[in-house]
Image 1 (cartoon, rainbow, N blue to C red):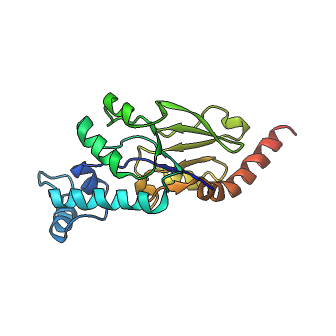
Image 2: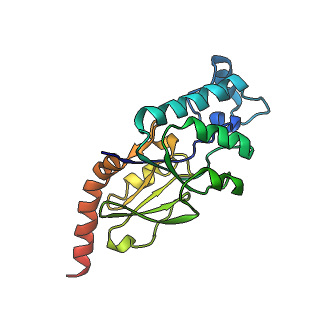
Image 3: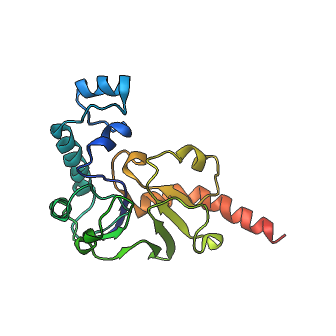
Length: 206
């Protein structure tokens, strides 16, 4: 039985994102530089970029089967169309769809199945509103639709946790242990939030 998966902010080929977001792929020497001057003029090595890219692709291919569906919510890579194509060809899943992010080139569109800036999809009966950017209100939010996003590199996790009825989740790799997240995993995350949400909705009718 096939599953649906979500991820965002892969940033393949993007050296600076590794140090700016403290991704765990720096060499020991680079870690020392980052600790003293994370945004300085020093450069992340090509070996580190390759280690980062290989790890993220391996994580996708280990979890997502060829017949599954994978949604990438923006910031796929930093590079030319040919470089993006090479990354896409390394992902084994055949059904990869795309929500455009701020780092993505228009030419990337042809590498994916469905492509959108934002929009609603359905997994079974569940409506899910996808956008690269986090939103605090979205289509059908008042009626129990979920919202999945990226872009912020885990910076809203505490804010989301403090609102237990918010039916939204950051699916970017920095918020998800550098792994894609399945629909069933998101459903488990949303279950207590849905209880809180529908209790709140019911209170409005009293």
